[in-house]
Length: 88
Image (tube, rainbow, N blue to C red; front, side):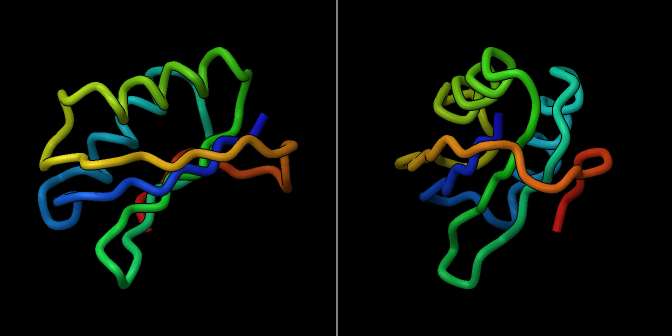
């Protein structure tokens, strides 16, 4: 399963992408977290749906760097393989 989530709030320049990468790797997920020009962070993660759901729970937990105001998530079929989990 592929999770595509846009995270809104004060999430750039606060270590949010690094934190997201760490949580994703702990769950064995592949993908990336990238800053968007409008201040959001786009998180794409691939792996078993229960593990992607756990990552989504982490993103919404209130225990992240910065301040998360909202997370908009979509579920998609797995796309092209992604090696590792990167910060973009």
